[in-house]
Length: 449
Image 1 (spheres, one colour):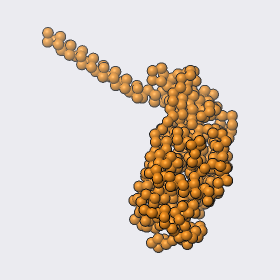
Image 2 (image 1 turned 180 degrees about the horizontal axis):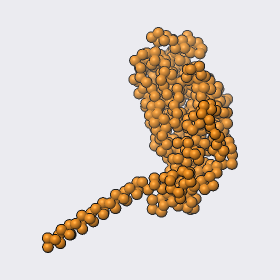
Image 3 (image 1 turned 180 degrees about the vertical axis):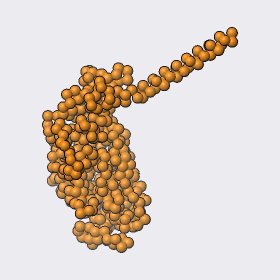
Image 4 (image 1 turned 45 degrees about the vertical axis):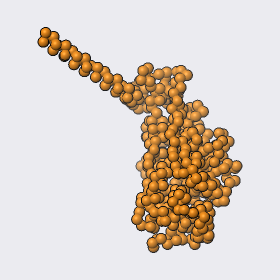
């Protein structure tokens, strides 16, 4: 009898171990099977690491890459304009759809496996805006991004320099034409922001310095802060707060930053989302930087977007979208939906969380200030009848190089709710260079959307 009990106990133990192993396998299968299927060594789905199933298309269904044939769009300009979004077959671009949406390209299902010849992956991008942005950059290094701040859809994401992925060049070491060509400047880079950062300084002043909108300021062309001279390109004279923003007066915003203090400035840059990395449909963005200094002169420089300030273009665009939303906006996303090439089944992937910014009153005042910038300084005629609110930036980068040119803002409209950012590396004046590129893209958006 004792022997029977021992055997019965052994059977129970073995059964429990079997069930535990089955549960462990099921859990690992549910969690990791998609990764196994999309492993580049899977010869049934990949050829030399490149998917052989599925298509990548824009929001309107225009084919950007067909994996079965390994072919890109017939339009050479569009191929260059979407290089960093779609990717190259050598897998050099880490932010690309070819590397980040492999599971969707294979149309993998944990129950049925890889289905119907793969999936048709719809990006939120509009090919027409991509082409317009690429042409607006006109061969310069930089980036342009546009997104719908009410829905989160990224409609345009161009990074240059680029190349034709259908006919990739041999890039020699030190070839300046392709400096950083594999880097998506929109998602993966940070740059000195220059005067676009004054929006953060203005937000902090509005909430922390009582009566700042009623104050007047005087600019004589320079201001001495603890022995360091901060200069303006012009003598602006006497101004109110709105005029100081429209004039982009370094003297005023440097002194406001000192009055606020470095810790407060850092808090507002963090609240704006500029200091932390985010994700766009699972693709990480670069984190910005703000260094808190005990030296007043350095705090002053940080308040005008210099010193050690760094900003990622995508997060700056999102901040502008949240100002347009008067304190909140959808976070940007890139992957809209996936449909099976073999059936009509659609798997919706779009939507994103909300970004919360400063108070509604603060954002409303900032929107008025940014609108005033356009009507009083940048020129409304550049944007036709679009109610554009914007801030330019001319970011000094030293080493004898021309400054980076920035232009960022939004269209304050429920019918065309777009936030945007344009950066031209070493391009010179922000309004003249990046502003012109942004205006060209926005006019195209008004025509086609």
